[in-house]
Amino acid sequence: MKVIYEIIKKPCLTEKGNFLQESESKVVFKVDKRANKIEIKNAVEHLFGVTVSKVATANMTGKRKRVGARSSGLTSNWKKAYITLSEGKIDFLDEL
Image (cartoon, rainbow, N blue to C red; front, side, top):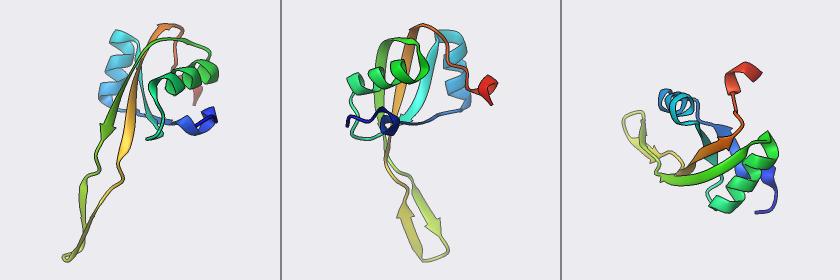
């Protein structure tokens, strides 16, 4: 896992993520399942030009979904990273 553009997939723009960003300067990203904390930290620092103080990860399991009356399945498992910033700010809504 050397390519930093494959580590960070997209930001999680939810109410909880927005609250954490405003109150505790934490940013939430969906990341690659095989990425570790050191790779995530280096990718965020390089891509956004901020200083990261802490990275916490959580593995999210897929949910059961039904399609029609007979068939059912699961959505994909994914990994979430809570990144605490010590310096700098990432604001996704102003860049749009």
